[in-house]
Image 1 (spheres, one colour):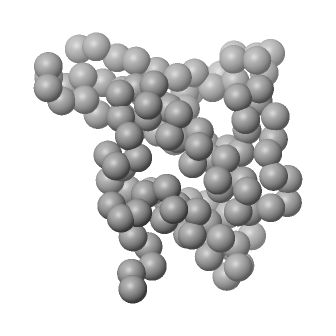
Image 2 (tube, rainbow, N blue to C red; image 1 turned 90 degrees about the vertical axis):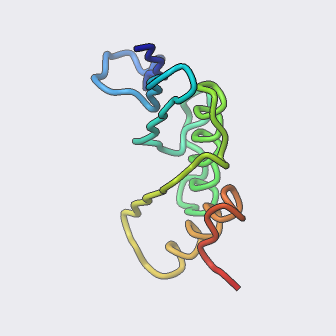
Image 3 (cartoon, one colour; image 1 turned 180 degrees about the vertical axis):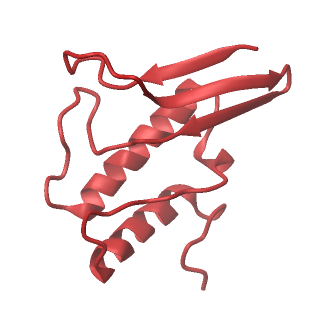
Length: 113
């Protein structure tokens, strides 16, 4: 069984016991990719959008998109998303939802017309 992973924190100066994304080939024609633990870091591992939920969500989604591409998937392959906010107030939840929808629609519309 072939496995590929994208490690977290390669430049953080310490070893970690998890990765941002993991792909496993289930058969020659099927591959599953799990993506988790995403935070609003750019490719140089700098925080993006401090204090701005929408900008942070956009960066997280870019990171997910990059991981999926590297492991052979696309945003169209996403089956489920789950988001967490340190302060889940309505305007933050709406900002997160709108950004997720912009990356996954029409596959996963969050705000159907």
